[in-house]
Amino acid sequence: MTWTGLQCQANSPPSPLATLAGNADMYGYFTPRLSASGSQTFQIRSDGTWSLARSGFSSVGLQATGSPTSGIWTSDPSLAYEYTITVSNWAGIGTVSPKTTQSTWTTLSNISLVASTPGGGVPEAEGMWIVNIRQKGTTSPVLTINIDLDTANGD
Image 1 (tube, one colour):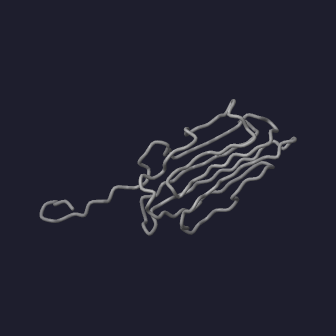
Image 2: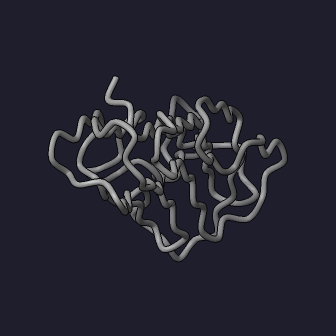
């Protein structure tokens, strides 16, 4: 509490979100290997960390924005969090998951966003998501992460 004039004003509690490195608002991971077989998985974990897992694609020629490929999205993983997915777009012939939005706030366990392609002439799979995270039971703060995974295209 602080005093302003003759009135006591409540201080806002510090935000447990967006406090550490690796917490940019946009991440894009692209591989330049045409017709390669592999997958990319962007994981947001309830322990307060996130990372990119890749199989079948080497990091040679990797194009990325919002690096590094792992980080911490909260300074207090002991709190309960919830999430929505407000955008879920996909393109290409490969597999993208999830393909639907999650409009109601849902308790965060672990989220995996996946784009994969079987290779053999299948050109690419691209997934684009916007994930919103907030402390459970609050209206703010909200951390918004934009993720774009693109396989075997290199654009």
